[in-house]
Image (cartoon, rainbow, N blue to C red; front, side, top):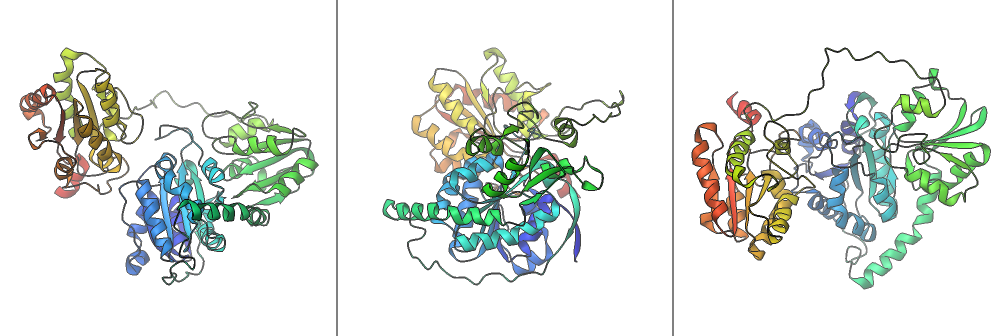
Length: 528
């Protein structure tokens, strides 16, 4: 099929497949999940036996991708923006190891925090690592960029970041496909010490990384994804990054803007093009989805000689997503009057599904903890985080993946009793195991609930890495066998479950309680 209707995520996946992809690695996280899901069900990927299984977390995914690159194959690793924090150790060091086969790090940022804990901008990581980054403005570019990124990666022997944001990742548009390329033949690095980061080698690799910067800048200056369009009105110049370019053009009939526009789709920032637009225009408006990284860079290397407007001066909001209306306001155009939302349309807060096993777990836990008062339950990232909301009001914290167990340890060490952690089965496999190991080593007085619903429910029913292994893992890190308890979270078993929870709270040490019942949607699928 030459033309497809694809999500931005799917366009990245199809573009990578058509560019000789041999393996995709990642951990599910909205809004990036659909990239690997598309590859998993793609007929050509199945026929070619492209590696496409989920990894335990983003760090392991990044390292697996580096291993495939070491063998000379083209690889894609996917994650959301907070997942890049988890992968940062491997990602930052990959700037020094470089790549053999092409590596794309596809990161989906979530401005406005639709399903995330923060609004961080992954472009800062690319700048920090001194590695190139691409940012598509539409689904066609999301498809076209993987081929370009693989070639760029192999030319400079560096991984390349491909940064998406929520609206592009989860909206559809027509995409025209190109000729499908063959996969790379396996070949090991010509330099046998390329991936050896002993200090003596790392220092040499860092010098090479620094020497590559001028070449990466030249690539950016000549990139087809960085385009300067001269306008008739020089009172304002607009620098529009990625999806923000679409928001700009939606405000003009036939996409004809009267101002000069520099469209940015590749980093490092093309200095010659930036200096051209700033020299020709009286003021500069920077449109970028996420944080004001380009705006801050302009203020730095233009030495205050131009008036720069954007998120930092209040022309655009400091937080949240951009949209055409906000861009319109920043341009000084008349506001478009929107129809009011009818009163019949009411906001619906998120809630646990009817029949969710977590509801019965929280019911039993609340009953046990009633004499102790509030403030004893440290939770994690997953569906069960909704236990904070009424009618459960059962948990007290949610910071980052895996933090439930480790925060409970810290609180217990401070004297809090009881100290309870609730963590999902997938999150336990992602980053909870090491926390449990800490608890055993410190002999912490904590009770850990590993909520086993047999799937990665929140991101779309992906397989959990620890299914069928949780008890063995707990025993393997040193939890006493008699204090690894499995319960069935059902209302009719509430009294029995309450008794078990009380027993484990009374035990002075690490206890693990595993409420095990399939997610209601998993159960329904199996029943069908």
